[in-house]
Figure (cartoon, one colour):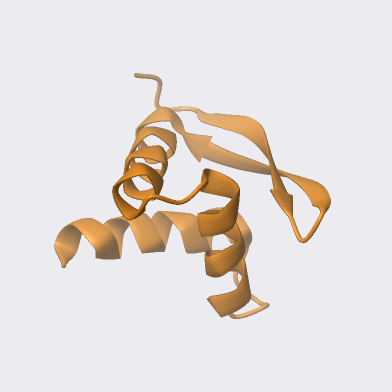
Length: 71
């Protein structure tokens, strides 16, 4: 796995957006979406809706993944 962020596209509220995450976070993010039985875009939309607007989406996803595995 690469330690450099990789940019991928997600669709939130019908709009495409790019998010840069390290491979390990992308893998964990996909794993969590699969566990929950939701598409990755739906999980990203949930995180996006819950985040503070001063927090970037990539940071919010990293914190979500971290909290998921800590809990």
